Length: 315
Image (cartoon, rainbow, N blue to C red; front, side, top):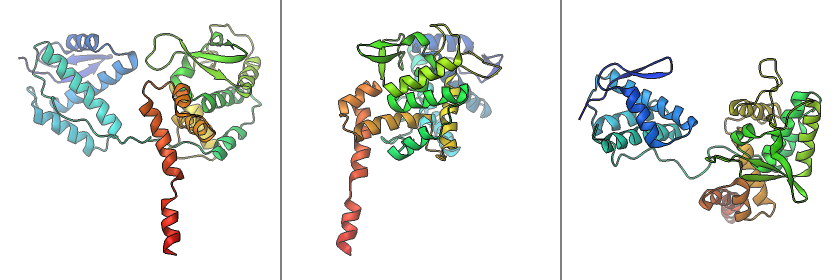
């Protein structure tokens, strides 16, 4: 089998400094993996880092010990377990494919990725905090109206930033006697799912659209307002920034409170106010109820008063 090359990046391409044509190998691997654009960029970044690791050590025929050393290096550098796991997964998939194609032996077999706890890494808002967040908006300017509508929609429906970014004006339509927003969910190719849009959320969106003025039905539901992207589709990064900025402005400044916290908040408030586990699963569109169970377990622990009872017994 062939040795593996070190690589560098030139004009967005992976370029081999020696050995087989890595760009061709990479292209074939991505076709094999059948991943989406966002995952593709992550795989590219992960493989670039891995080959740079090999190149810096002059390794052209990596072994299982080199994979373990790479894993330990990421841990020593303080990479988050989720990031280290993602990077190592990309490398493992690459070597699985290389072995399948007869190019290089799979030296990653039985090497475990970083363990990630079952709990969530981000906090949710309490009812009081959620109310304070919504009440912190002035809603005078077009930007304020837009941001308030995004926050209200996120905290009520638990939509992901990518789902908000993909939404068009035409996706907001009637569902029976209620309004719904049809969405292209995570890992989906079409807008087959929907979330119900309660009256106050719909009012906030309509208020924003009225202030926005002329727009087409196929235009993005939430658009840029600045000179650089006026009327253009917001990116997931922009939406995350809007939501994080709103949290900070409302005095909720914590590394554990991010845009994803609003999704957690939707699930938690639903459970706290009588929603069932199955209803919460449907709300968040989880494919596996075990993911939804994490919310329920977190609430069970929050309501567990064991420590207070022990303290009371001790006097």
